[in-house]
Length: 264
Image 1: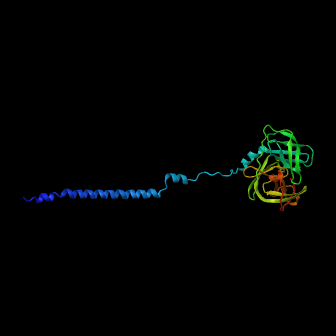
Image 2: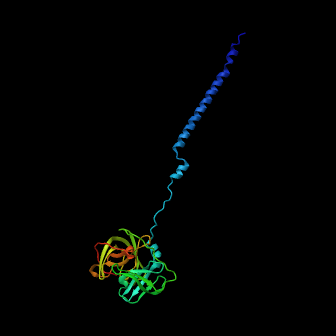
Image 3: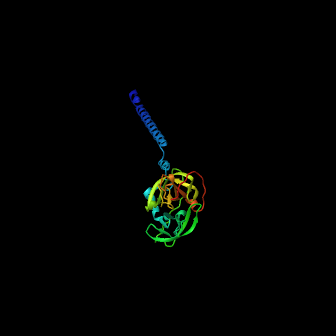
């Protein structure tokens, strides 16, 4: 007998198998496309480890500048009042043994020298060393306060940098003023001689400020105040003061430049 219909039906499983194979291949292709897209996106995005490595890490910075009150609080315990028969000046403790730097003209008149520390301790003092050419003197007190606080000494100074002066202007003890460095290597022609290599600044100073510290923005002593410039020879502040750089005060010096005024 003719089995034509049955023969035709015998090819159906093969057709279905081909369709399943094609569907499976299509699924594989789609999966490969998805994987390729994901791989591309992952390649474009930085790995977590790289992102962490790219994050800037803190780097060491220079000591932060202080506010004027912060500078005063740091240095005030090191500032002393210097009294002589010639009047009143200022000094600053520069060593743990209590050595005080001041302006030489403050103590040049001779006689008894009395120093008063920040805590109120009062003692006589003797001149340990003096350099009239620099207008700097070092004093040794006969008695020290219970706690000796020496100031931290700094280094160079730059024009435009902020400065603070602490002293006893016009007898107003423990006074603070602020300004900037307005010149370097200046010369002050005073009634006790000409002094060179000075820092010029505009923080207010007056008679009684001499010998006090000039401080930078970090509270470091960069100079010792010795003079002011004033019109008509008047011993009153007119906008310019002078200080011996701390390096010179400790044994070096030199410089040039215009400027003159009375000592204070």
